[in-house]
Length: 300
Ligand code: ADE
Image (tube, rainbow, N blue to C red; front, side, top):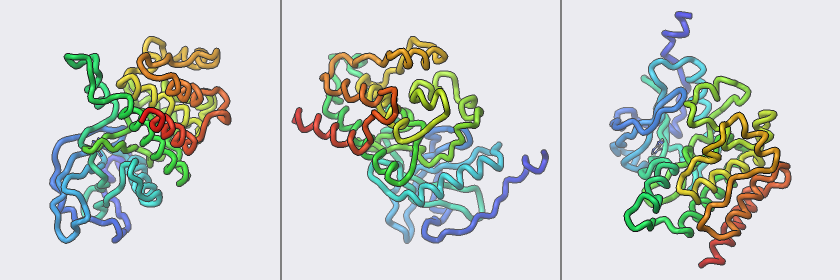
């Protein structure tokens, strides 16, 4: 209807704990575009409020957004407020809700998304076949993801789309889980349809999510296993040669991603635990944190 096309003005309550002066943001490049919005890099010109870093990322809606897109961004912001801060998630810094478009201001991660970062550091792509990212650094990445997920689970949050493309890398190589506050309606077929063909989350999904749209900490642990495999392969595409419609039967028959060649057995053993068909048999994130720490201690 015409009304829903032109309703670009909303009245949002002001939350003084988070409200930032709009004039302090000076927008730069587009960092990413999602289903309903985009993320812009911005300079935060410090005024009285000097707690904020000088460079931030700002989530906004696209011009052609719908009312439900607006509701989704507001609820993402409210979820981020409730969840609180952790070193390994993209933290909310503030927002601009008054007298203009909604801006959700979050931490900026200067090394971008983990998948591209890994691809860029693939030893196969560098002259001597060496990478600054050795096994230790890669396992530390996985450990940081597990720590961020342990925190999110403790706050009652299920991610549903854990993958290297949804994890960011900060300037000091801190891993930051992104898009955890998205209120995804996974029963909404449009959520899958809107994604481009090569980025279907099917390859990261647990069998019970594929079969029954069933999402729990256990299904996030399955996805973590796939993400761990992405890390150890410098960002390869999981089951690259397998068309996605074969995936469920492939997994049900007991097949799994193959072992990333050059790394120790304990790493692959941990991945296989994440891919137990029975969700209850998979380790919890708190257990994964301990096991990854053990691997690091053994090779210290
Ligand atoms: N791309 C999407 N969100 C980002 C962020 N917060 N920092 C850097 N790149 C991003």
